[in-house]
Image (cartoon, rainbow, N blue to C red; front, side):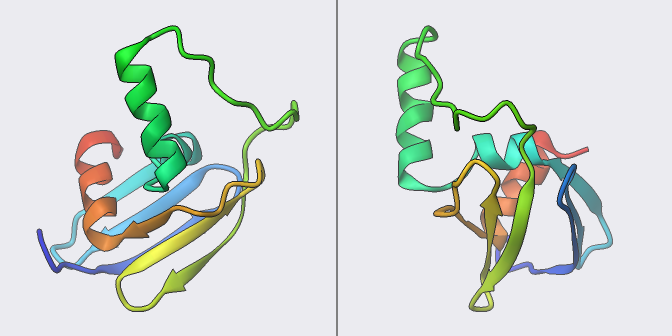
Length: 107
């Protein structure tokens, strides 16, 4: 729903993001989903490359540690920015984009 804002956000740094929306619906997005579908320009380009060539090599952080969220911050009144343990922190998740992710990948 366009213009809808979450009423509650809870980031579990080891698991993912719980979101409750104004309509009362609740979703959970794993860190893996949030990282894979980051709205950053580099992540969008990587998804395009993967769609064109399924053998695309995914970049790694060089660490064998599991992905975690180091923290998050609000971007104005319209989005959330998540800082991941692999160094990625350029994706800005608008409320509208988070709603789309919930519909497609939420639990």
